[in-house]
Structures are given as structure tokens and as C-alpha cells.
View (cartoon, rainbow, N blue to C red):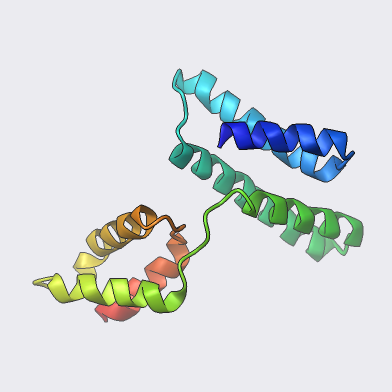
Length: 148
């Protein structure tokens, strides 16, 4: 992932793509900061978490600019979100996700809201093992519906 980011950074500089260069530089800086602060080498899963945080922050900025009516910034934030999203795995479609949840819920002895945390954790792990991104909000809502 780091090599891809470095190559994309160089390509963005060659192509004079300021927005992509900025987003990739921001991602690389956030990775480096986390590695220095925690004295570790981030693996791809941890890098994805960093990118998700950047994407979330950018989405919040987008909402603020939309509220303020700043169309130029809105367009830039949308472009930045699109670039950041390109580094994230795809989300599993809802049908497959529901099937996974129902499969796990069927194995539970007690099908109540008390099992929600355990169910979310297990399904999230299965989704990520399958190479998809697990959206916590969507997953929580589907698990809640399956357990009620």
C-alpha cells in the first residue's frame, strides 16, 4: 500500500494533479505520524484505518461547506473523498452482508440485543477476511434488525 501511495504521489506530481497530490501527501503524512508516535511499522489493515479516518474528516468538511454554500470547496472535497476512497477496499453488498449476519445469528444460543456486540465483531471479522470493507453504521443497523 505504501508503495502504491508513493507511486501515485509521483504520478500526481508529474501530471500536475494538485488535488490528488494533496490527498496522497496527507495520507502518507498521517501514516508516517502514526508510525513515529507509536514506534511501529503500519501494515495494510492499519493504513486502511488511517485512510478511513481521513475520509471521515473530509466528509465532515464537505458537509460543513455544503451548509455554508461554498460550491468551490464542495467540489474539491468531493474529489478528495473520491481519491481517498480509491485506496479503500470495496464495501460488501447488502445482500451478502445480510446473509452473513443471518448465518451467524442462526448459530447463537441467545438471540437478543445482548448478543449485538459479539455478532458485530464476528461478522466484521468475516467481512474483512473476505477482503471487503465493513461499514460500522450499516453493519450495526443490519445486526440490530436481525436480532430484533
